[in-house]
Length: 397
Image (cartoon, rainbow, N blue to C red; front, side, top):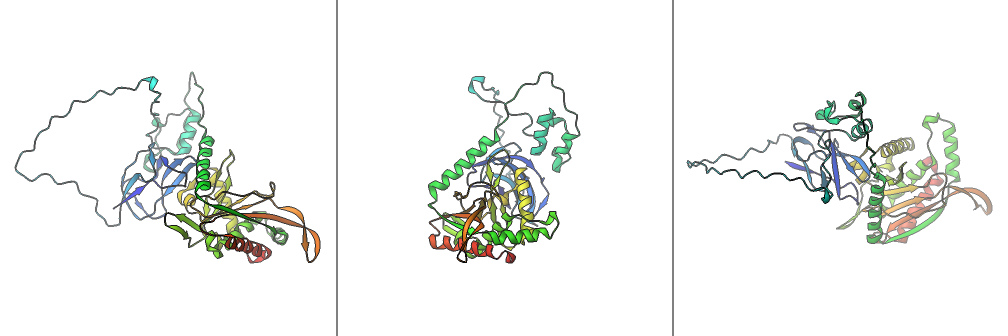
């Protein structure tokens, strides 16, 4: 029998709010199944389970804010019998009768204490999208019959319900989720700068060859099959991380642990502001079209706040790119427990020496922030050199 606990979904997470169960007692689950949705400062995250078994019990209520490590559910292994109830006493002595204590009257806290009543819908099983839509339309979730797992109310149930009429709508102040996200980002970055001895190396890379090769490649395929220059940058970084192990892994209480695979974190700028960095597993082994598809899908789900817990915690190296326009270079802050972050400036046409002549070339500045507890300038320089070499031979990517 195992206990499924509230996972840590980032270095800045201390607690999460359980907003949806996707399983019920008696359901069979296997490693990787999505079993719940937890809301953090960075949005709603789909929680995966990491063992096979049977759900014995759900030990946390929807709406509860729980610290990392708090029990969420009890899982029985395959073939394991549920725990039996404690046996009744076998002695011949009649059990002692204890008079129940008088019930204490519940006293509501005074308004001056500043406590707010618990929302009536907090204990109702409903998806985050259904809750938001119900609030917008003025629909009482408690009056709906859910069609989701375990009778949970889903978005479709709300959409097919006529909105209630409100005679005197009261203006409400929307929760500023972006403020909370900014707090979370600030806490993580403050911890990173305080605990990690950063050092940075920058290198200007001639990407003209890569850009020309990509233009020719894209011209020969339909628009849906074209890839972006940033995909080449990501693949080159992933290949470099696979070769320079000091840039790919986690630093914990026992020191540095190199990662057995490259799970490339992709920094995604959210439309309302803020930043999130979910990971693409084994990015170094993906073909360019597959990597492009994985990046597009990941960005779409990140902006819809429908990421999975493994995507938030498995990153081994993060890449942050400014895109086609913007600053020439930037220096990033490492996202713990990772030990490196690669920041890529916007490509620019610059004068460059090629075979003794000054010619205009497309350049991009790659800046590596690394953890000095794990690496030094020699490894960092090798990492950037591997990226440069890969981009001079784009057909091999």
